[in-house]
Image 1: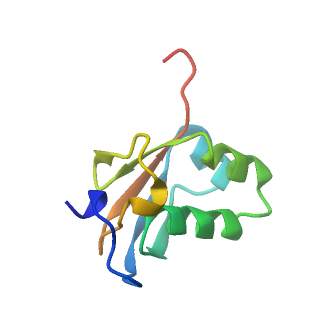
Image 2: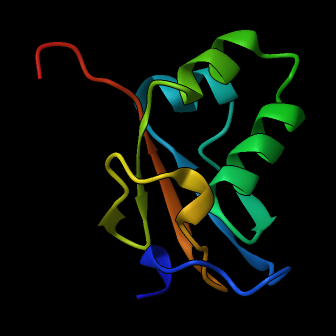
Length: 97
């Protein structure tokens, strides 16, 4: 269960961030690679990469996340380890749901 455990110190993994709905629209792309040890690191890097897209940066603070298919929920993003070849799904709030 790599998505729920604390990562080894400095262990970085490579995988894919997938943007859905409004996040996809604001990012201007459907997916991009990550290289990070934790979800918090991956999101900080995405915010930095997309600093010229303030709506996306703001939206990322309101999204729900799945890491390798598991819901992150209210867990601290710094405690959510990322896995080699893994996937982070970025799910913005949906109207009416």
